Image (cartoon, rainbow, N blue to C red; front, side):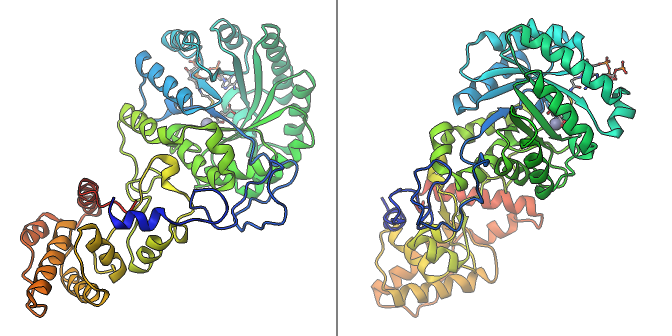
Length: 473
Ligand SMILES: CC(=O)SCCNC(=O)CCNC(=O)[C@H](O)C(C)(C)COP(=O)(O)OP(=O)(O)OC[C@H]1O[C@@H](n2cnc3c(N)ncnc32)[C@H](O)[C@@H]1OP(=O)(O)O
Ligand SMILES: O=C(O)CCC(=O)C(=O)O
Ligand SMILES: [Zn+2]
């Protein structure tokens, strides 16, 4: 193992977890955390908060199928359902069996696999859909109907009295088949609050298992979410599910605020795929929640399967994983600036709130740039099993930076400078000018201006780092 790995792995956070979490990091919400330990990242919590006790309704096979690029054949749906189940999601939501003959057949097929996760299907608030749904073998039915004036007028044309009457009919019918039932108002945040609370109270009284709040157009802010969920928590006794679109970039924070306010279930999809730019991504939610309650998240979800799960779905819908994706983006755990690199090598908690190892991933120190510093270069020198004094490392770093001021470098360039510098030192010829490493010119010639190509060049460099076993830890 290269010395730099020891340097990083040897750090203790002093809280009894070998997790590189900030000192004093403590679990909250389970009654086991010492009350006198203050954790600055501790969620704002009270007895209604479910930040440390939530369930995931995974909707890649329902909301995700509404993503513009999605087409899942039966085999792919089964593969994704099994992967989600293996990851540990609590529920898997499937497209309405009323959508098409194949949707119905696929729903039945997935119900027969015998997964641990409960299987749900998602239908309109209509007896015709309910009749089809209960025949599929699902564990639960998610019923939805728009309650905002936009949707009441332009989508289904029904008033609140009709909605309440039909909702009660559908709920009682589904319940009579011994199947779990959820009632949700579509476009909840643009609906009248009195209408909303009234319909939720009605369905709660007839024994619905969950009510759902949906930010269908992605307009809600975290504070609005908190307020609505907290108000609803005081009105119904059943569970509260929430569903957040990401049009204005709040899907993860809204999910988190919903849990703080007392919601019990969060809808997700892998990579956030769904209508328009989608909903709360499963991986992003995991990133948020592991910071809030690491023990709970690790006890429920196989986080090291996240990358494969995302790759599976990304391939199925023919998209790339974004470079800045939560957790699995190619530079999510790469540290570049010298100040960061030095501190990371001393203790990863300095610049990381999430431990990549929790997700089976690795952190990297990027040292082939003019922003590098002698500590990063020293670590690389040690990885290369060379011996240079600190003063020599500083001199070598100065030479690397000089070249990096002129052109982009890759790992081979830096290694070549280090090796040549080392050879000169051993020859006693430290002042000998370094020749420009072979290949730099041709590498430069291959680097066009577009950021996307730069990303792929950097990606390749990071792969090289990986292959060279130059991992930080
Ligand atoms: C916000 C969301 O993502 S909700 C979930 C969206 N999911 C889907 O739409 C599933 C895929 N959809 C489909 O396959 C089709 O739209 C079907 C089978 C559901 C309906 O198809 P069609 O009968 O051809 O109707 P179409 O799609 O053109 O219009 C929607 C119909 O549902 C009605 N409707 C819309 N929402 C609801 C609702 N929540 N509850 C009851 N009826 C509704 C509309 O009034 C309209 O019926 P109408 O044409 O008789 O007025
Ligand atoms: O059923 C729900 O709660 C959500 C439906 C949906 O996808 C939405 O409103 O965006
Ligand atoms: Zn949605």
